[in-house]
Length: 290
Image (cartoon, one colour):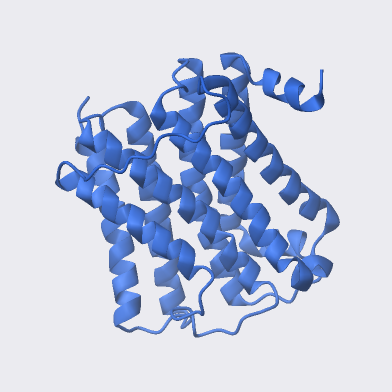
């Protein structure tokens, strides 16, 4: 039996699937906390040869709060595996989103390798690559074992929103996709501090997390269309989005106070939009009934 076949077979049982998603959720949660609470230490350990700025600390904290949303998704997948529900379109979409997130992390690293490779701690660089590859492989393997069609892409939800809440999630999806593009565009908000050699890398690693947030929003839009937002999975996803956006709002507000961001209309719009999404997600979490 080839390695690839053995790897896929490893995740054929619900028990192994649940264990894998438990490990991924724990990894995301730990990295999220470390990046938000001790960003300077993380930067020193991961990039010991780099000169880092205060802006790099801010950008790593933002990457950290995106991992809180990832943990919410992986925790939901763990429970779905235990209940043998991973075949449903909801979980197939979430796993595909997680696999895309892993590809995104690797793509951002590859794009920044020429300018940053010599700044990395080799063990941390290898851990970054290994974790992204393992997470992507786990999600693709579980999709292969549960979809009923092998490694097939999940069906897209292209229906128009059916109610105001669904329109809210559709708007969130579009905003998150625009945020992904903004991760690679010239900076217009964080202009109060200079870029270092690693700033593009740190800003780039936001993109996979916001891409997953777009998938989460699309899944929640479908759940709203079906009147299912009170189910535990969708409550978890709403909590994940609320954690992401409230965390981002606090970090962005701190950046304004430290003069990394000018107080102007775009900045206030960005802060207001983030708080609005967070409150929308938390309100839906609190009020949706099964």
